[in-house]
Length: 189
Image (tube, rainbow, N blue to C red; front, side, top):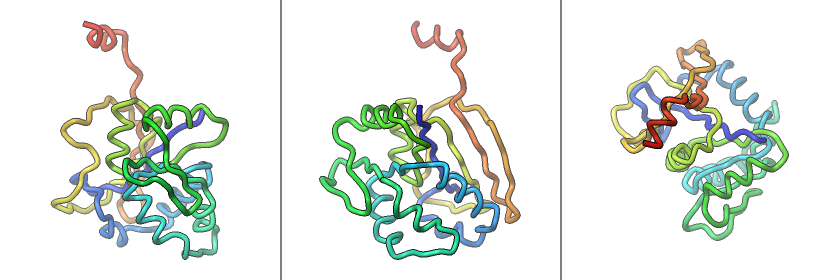
């Protein structure tokens, strides 16, 4: 079964909106991490806002290591209530998003990668459809903006890996924590 991996840039105070503040922290470590994530995936899953931003920027990009070509060639699945069609090798998910993503996970293939898309990540979290979170926490306090997790978000996660880049970005890899027999009983009560 394919895994859904959410790869997200965050500030120390949890902001992920408009991540222009990440640029001073870009280094070879982050470049390798993004390259490895991208090339271990065979599809992107994006919310409408992230899709529209990416579709406006990526088609004209080129680089020496093939990252841009990979981004442009990957099939994209867009979760949207307003888009009817999509371009840039993309299709709009039809029907209920959780069901559509669950079906995508059942298809043969590699990982399905989510970049950004806070609302989509929170929604999929509620439906237990994210298999791994790669949180790239940058050593900056932004002070305001959209945060990844809101008051309605709740999940028990298990830390599976950490990495610190040369610029001080802490990459935290989490997976959903296995439910214990006690917690399952509490849910049924």
